Image (cartoon, rainbow, N blue to C red; front, side, top):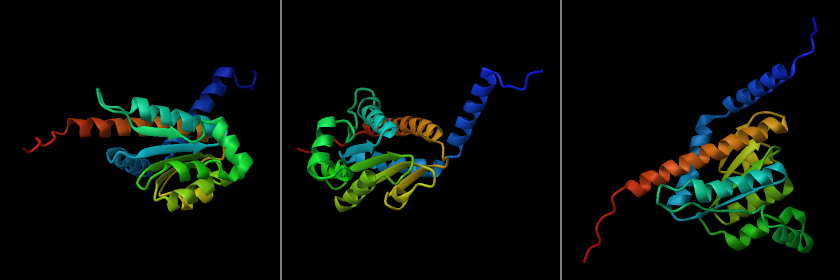
Amino acid sequence: MSVVPTREQGITRWLEEAARVVRSVDVTAVARAADALSDVRARGGVIYTAGNGGSAAGASHLALDLQKAARSPGGSGTRAISLSDSVGLITAWANDTAFDRVFADQLAVLANPGDGLVVISVSGSSPNLIALLQAAREKEVVSVGLLGRDGGRARRLVDVPVVVRSNDYGWVEAAHAVLHHVLTYALRESACATDATPRPAPTA
């Protein structure tokens, strides 16, 4: 009898590991992240996102979901922009300053106090994301980190760290994709609750 696992057995094992990694995420930390971003939305702030590589794609995905899918029915979307999206801006800043500054210098131009930032990183230690988080502190921007491994250097710099405790890039990025949607749904619920709250009639 063959001991070589079948394709189905391998896929089952991979899916079970993915589910285990997702279940390991601290729900309280995710709730704090959702509350922080909901507060930014409620006061009309902009939520910026950033990441490198696969996490850059994740940052773009999260920004589009926040802007479009986090709306209440008939309501307005969350103001969200991915700092990873513009190749022109990234290469301009990298060419004129350094690649470590490609996100921080964008935030310095765009952000206002009270805006929000979500950094997405498996290692949590990418130099350009560390510089971005330092810029966020200087601009009084509320920061959330979707991180992997032990959170890296970013864990101590973000206001709300959400750490996916795995050393496997694939499982961390998969869990981050789940968290993107969790945060989107949470902001949509907040938007629905806010838009359903009766507003006082204007006084003469």
